[in-house]
Image (tube, rainbow, N blue to C red; front, top):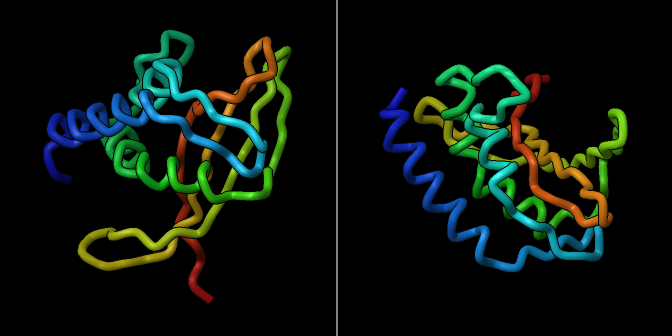
Length: 133
């Protein structure tokens, strides 16, 4: 695995720039807020949860550009979950990514949460390998 510190720094620079942009979601027909809450969740510095493994954090950092693109292009909300008073929304897409020097299709899931005003906030991104048929 390449240098986690370097990948984290690149991801942080991407995230900081993304935070200054308007990200419109056709699925929600509104703008999505990109805040430190999402970064803290991705990096594992969210105090409410255990820290992430280096491998998990690395993967999520590399998926950030895909998360942004999925939010901007997805027209369908795949899943809505309620945990206590908090609502979680999932957007998904199959994306070709480079992995171990090869290209492969992965299902990327982007999670957004709803704040007290009903606004949607980027929260997390994850991937899953697709089974070969």
